[in-house]
Amino acid sequence: MEPLRRGGYVVAFRHAATDPTATDMTGDLRDCSRQRNLNAEGRRQARAIGRAFRRLGIPVGRVLASPFCRTRDTARLAFGRVRPSRALLSADSFGGGGAAERQRAGLRRLLGLAPRRGTNTVLVSHEAAIHAATGVTVAEGESVIVAPRRERRGFQIVSTVEAGAWPRAARAAR
Image (cartoon, rainbow, N blue to C red):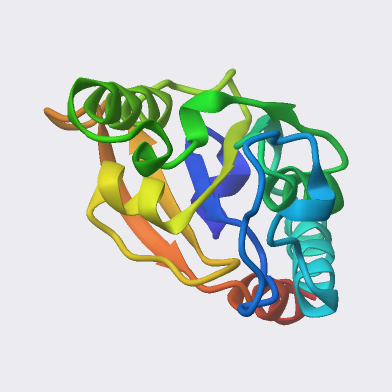
């Protein structure tokens, strides 16, 4: 976690824990009542991640999230702010073909974009989107840390971090 204190990384989170029995039943991404939302554990998880970042002294610049309620809520609870970005939607939201590939390329561009000096960028997205862009499968609340522009595809995967590892690292750092 030490390198994150200097900034320069992108941390791509899958949204925190949700009710696995719920499904998305709307095309209107502002309608949270008909989406799979964070459950109580997910809200706790997101808050704990944010507290850990603050205790560990990890500077956060831009915070972007998919327009779904669960991703925006994860970002807001963890980092206190969020800007929705359609680039963080899963490619399957766009059907097949060229639109899906453009969607994957958009997320790869975000992963390869260097953060403002001395900060890290946080992205909150979905498992399918993160997997399509990085090849890494992440559980709810888990993250992939990437270093922008250090290899041909525009970023280098540094590590994955499970949701509970952030609070454990903060406790160990005390």
